[in-house]
Image 1 (tube, rainbow, N blue to C red):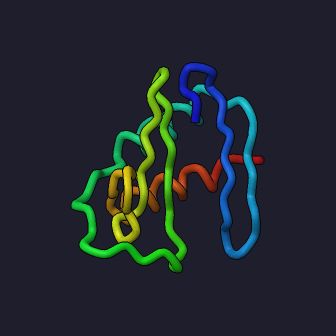
Image 2 (tube, rainbow, N blue to C red):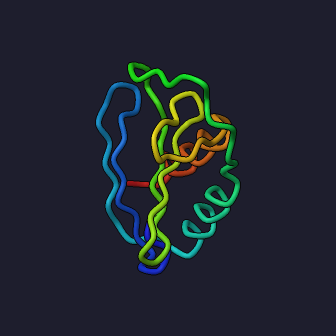
Image 3 (cartoon, rainbow, N blue to C red):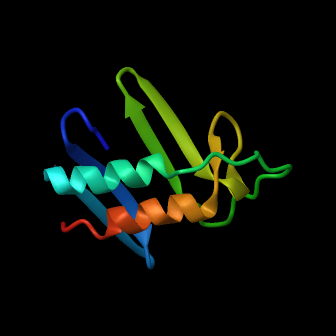
Length: 99
């Protein structure tokens, strides 16, 4: 998501299908995505990190800085752990955007 350029460039695996979205967003779409990103909540890092389970993740770019958020159960390394509910809500918003 590039808020400055008002564009989205996303790739996901949803229901075992590869889905991509690359386009400009309307002002209403930007507002919905901003609200969903703002609602993503950081969570404690897990004690162990399974690597074979499907996991939701998000990369947010703010200027020259990039932040990588991963669903709490698999947040290892330099990623920030976030609650499953909050990242799922964001994915729902992104999934509802027309292609």
